[in-house]
Image (cartoon, rainbow, N blue to C red; front, side):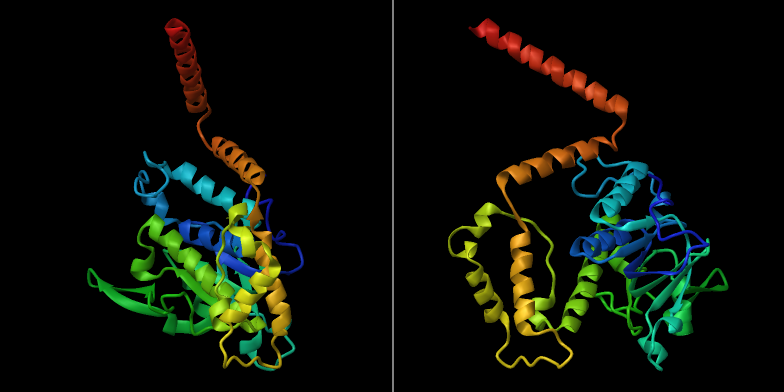
Length: 326
């Protein structure tokens, strides 16, 4: 399936909505999209335009690739991971983001969601948007104008750039609903740093969303991992222990707002989420097998066949050696 076909509708389609839109599917954008989609948010990722990685000859310092990884394969892995996590990946260039005043009943434009407009005529209305394009943030200008940019002089000419300090270190901005993972100065200067920043900003977005639901501050930050059966042994196999853990982390002075979900409902969701992460040894083995096979899809077929032949030769030699020793 092509990137373009896994999208948010064509230019002639009706406007669609999403929980979150990520602009860019480089290391920062892909990481953000993966975290958001895995949490369960309907996430659209737009990916078209200049990428800083395109200027890199070969990626040699990204952990997990002992001999490095070529850029084309790495970018394909990023896009595949975003899709696998549940993102709607769309090959289209975002041209502007503005308030969707037609999508709210409030008289205050600041209460309106964000409308993402693209080069090919798509329009996606979302509660939250993560900017993740290192080269430019020009598409954000309609939201806060010139305050989002700074001017530098170079070779006697003035050039305007998106202000890397417009967002804080967690990616929050003065514009409600807008988060910036990139450009963000020194926080996204290398692929591995950018990926970490994208994941961190996504977790910030999820934290804000959980705070709006009524979670206490120290229970709002979301962690994303699967747990083996051993994590549920003894008292931790009892849901009551997890309920106690939730209650222990609620501050004594915590007061819920009238608009918040009941604390008991949030506690139940917290416990359900914990048990949903449980994986048996057989499930882990199945996940591992599928993961390894999925990686093979991105490797050069000739290299895979060459390595398979080497493995067969090594096994045959080992068998012959064992028979000689007997």
